[in-house]
Length: 254
Image (cartoon, rainbow, N blue to C red; front, top):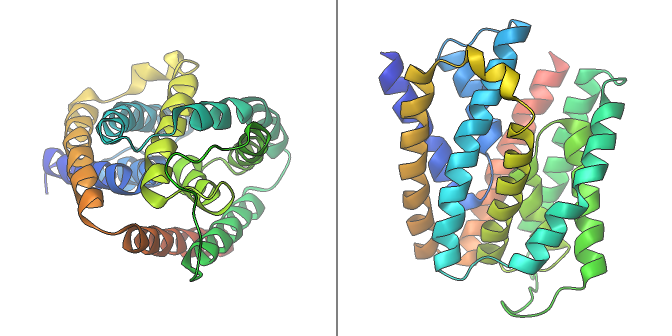
């Protein structure tokens, strides 16, 4: 199968995940670039792969954010506070993570993801009304905790933001997805601004069609999310999160 077809297919999946679930962009994009599209595991090329993934996720999450904002599914104030509070903890935890073994970090992420998924699957959950106010201290504290986890474990922006918004801040699932995209967009833009030196190794013949398909897939994901109930969307997200946790745990144990 040609690289172009693989890039288009992978981009569609990444866009669909971001548009419908508000997460999964980097978790899906980096393996697709490395294992499907010829990015090797050499250090320099891995840096180019993560930079390419950031470009893809930034463009796609901004598109999906716009689509969800048009439907009123973004809690702007809470989301901005949530994202801002996580910046410094993420940087500090990222520096600390270099002193810990990677298999331990991967297993820790898998455990956190699995716990978050199981909590989302619990029946009888109550959520706040779409316009219910969120206490700033709660939003900031949750965002700081997520930032620390993301910085320490290396991944999990959207995949951990959505469960945090649902289970801690009691967001309705569609509002959690839309607000998660605000968090992902802010984090991706911030990370991308520091990676100019690694952009030289990017293969644009792969990244451009990948990004285009992902952007189109994000619109399809938004339409899909609008057609299903919040309960079904939450369960689908939790199952996807469990699958990611299982994959990462298996990787840590190999």
